[in-house]
Length: 182
Image (cartoon, rainbow, N blue to C red; front, side, top):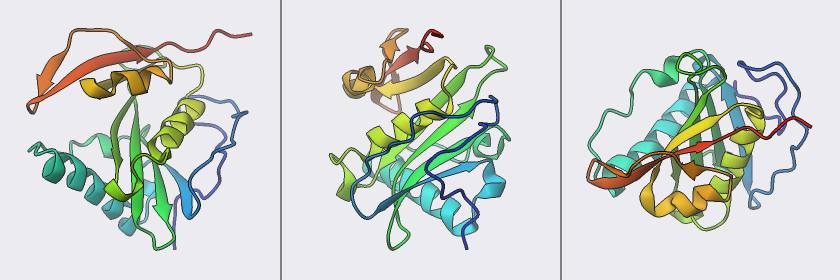
């Protein structure tokens, strides 16, 4: 039995108290959007699937030997967003961190990973869109692999620092300012 929310629209993100307005997600057929606010909302098999995909993509495929279990998944403000296939496998995942200790309202998007079978089908884009909807009104940062800066640019992210190497892969810090209030 799953503990995570099956709702496509989540009200009251942990760092903001407002309702979402745009919840129309277009995942490929057979995938379900999932969201967990805090690790306590994840069943063990859900957490395992998320961590397994992150390790498959970053450690095995991209040959980045690093400690994925960095403690940030345990923080109370962390939100996991992922898409599952009908058989329960994780097709893609995104982690959203509450970095408001660094700057009021700041969130950090990271650990964006998509299983090879689901790449090029818009799955990661839907997860990023959902993350930005959950955190509407907050500035957002991420550290993009440099070859993906144009892709993140379509969500309003712009480079905000110099390119650097992490695990031998060029990365670019990026930032997205919240939309002005109407």
